[in-house]
Image (cartoon, rainbow, N blue to C red; front, side, top):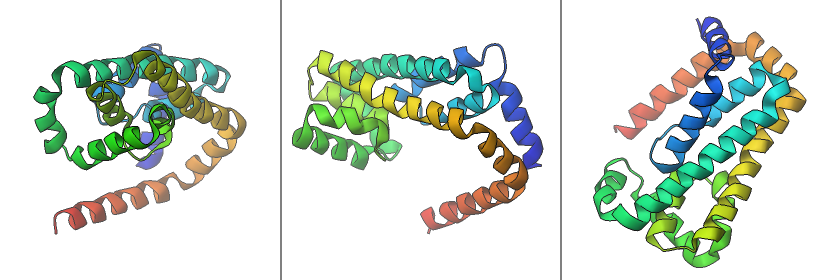
Length: 190
């Protein structure tokens, strides 16, 4: 079952419009969408290792543009989206991001790409806090770019080994992930 799903994912990653979808997903994730672009970037890098740098570039540009959108949402319409932040369980993450900005300023956006707090939360908080726009964009380019180029580098370096491991252990990994998700759902609902 999971072997077929893995094969289908790699086929989709090699689709002619995959780069376009990666770009759109990167924009959406940085401002409002919950799924990170890594879920497309990684299989695309695996499917076509000669284009990993191109995929990292597309993801970075899309992510920064989405970050700008998130910044503008925070700056001009936070009162409209605040209930959604609360509803979808991001309020604690938002408050943590605000605290990071107060404590570290520019450095908060720079490390946001590697933090457990979703990047979209940082972009919205940066807008709400009126962070200077140019440092926000520069920090986003460096922080997000570092993350996506690291993914590309790792798949360029270890892609064949990752592919071998995934093909060999895909069913174990798949069932293990489903089990962890089920346990998480049960624990959340207790």
